[in-house]
Length: 166
Image (cartoon, rainbow, N blue to C red; front, side, top):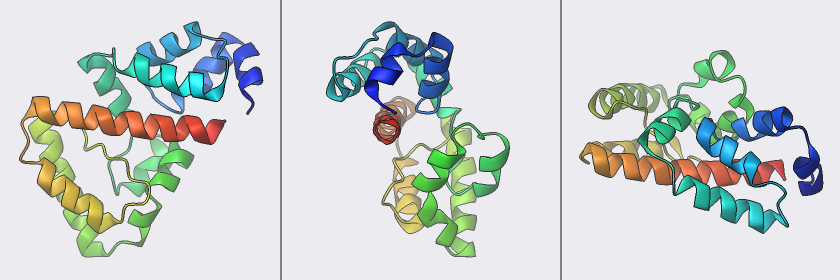
């Protein structure tokens, strides 16, 4: 995809494309409204600036666009629009032991019950064991602190996906 093509595409097509990077509708709408972008750096800078003005509901909506870490089976079902991204981002999880996957599943459930949203982590380059350690450590946070961390991780994921598009 070229930036010029993105700048000129129909609003509905641009919306669909950006939803693959982040499923927060408010962020997508704002990104589309700021077209045209002068350069890719302008696009990435604006993506972060817009994300920094989002609210809790926007974060939660974005988190809903992700499968749980290690829940490879849900990729093909619920998350078909972002499956190829998430599958690539979580590729090391598919190589994890049954024990590690079981621990991830159990702690993911604990995390979601405690915070009200799924565990969000920038998974690229991290092993399943790394993610399990992060999950364990983040369970001790309070909700406000964890929402901030998860939103920051979401921003990293969003930027990676944007870069992969362009």
